[in-house]
Length: 161
Image 1: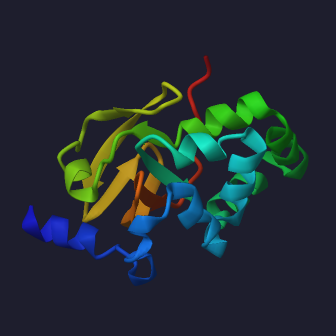
Image 2 (image 1 turned 60 degrees about the vertical axis):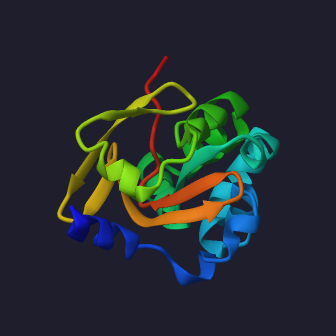
């Protein structure tokens, strides 16, 4: 278990070490790898929501959004960015209430995490990697003053309601 925690902790990125005085949105806005996520958060009107409250955000990188765009097509992707309700559902499927650090996520192995949107994703831990749904956490424990960010490699899609 200690070895696994050390592996998970190794994902912490040095440039984010002094980020605890910024909100989740401010941290994301300050990192070019999250430009698509920030654009989507603004389009959905979620800046204030994600700047207040306490959240754990599973933040997809630009590469993750590019993979989604390739999968569904440019036109469908552009349509999602313009559909505030659908975009809000997708983005809120990337957040859980409260702060869940990597060491806590390891304890959730095999259990489900319910997102703000209401979708439940299974958390799995194997070979030193934490997954939520189909997404792998590639960087963990980027602390913000209102929660934590875990960088993921895949855009999580909410369950249809």
